[in-house]
Image 1 (cartoon, rainbow, N blue to C red):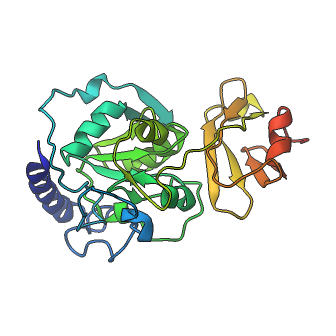
Image 2 (image 1 turned 30 degrees about the horizontal axis):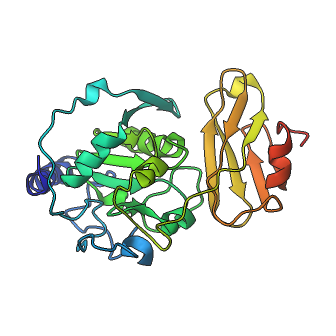
Length: 282
């Protein structure tokens, strides 16, 4: 399905969703649509280079590009899955996500913090932070029809995006995916990006390891930059342990951070959080 066919299909799906699910998430897209600029800040098309202009930045559908890939068979039933908040999320391989991008065959949503979105993001993607990230801005995904294909992504590589995808699935969206390898693999492959600093990549010099009660297995552990709107999360394993490699921007060992699990919240520095195993006594 190419971009023209997909947009036509979206219109039909949206009409059905609006008629049958009035007031539910996504049903308002064709009635009112997202407010202008919703989820697409000034960084949306910054430094896009030779990429075409996107005249509909709130729809999450990439703009038409000159190179349309050869049609290929894609079987979503073959995708691996990841359980987030008790919901199974299909993990789309990054080459398939890029194929859908080139064909304009999916809506793209960035589940990271706004700070990281502004630095760089998949061109055409809207800002739609995962649950657990403080955000009081407009989220255009709330206006998208529930039957549309939605691809979420993050950089960790797929925990935050799976949390966002799980929330959408639980809200009635039925064709939702998270990119398996995550945003930084997209970036490494020189797939289309935009943003204030599209060439920037995280140093990945900090690794936070922690432990909590095994009763919190499968819940999320968070590391947040204090007061800076940057957060990363990972899943707590069956033994109560977790490892997180933050992709924060502009941090040092002295940067204040907050480590959160369902059992405790620790205020420390990034350097201290990486020197040993974080627990309630850190």
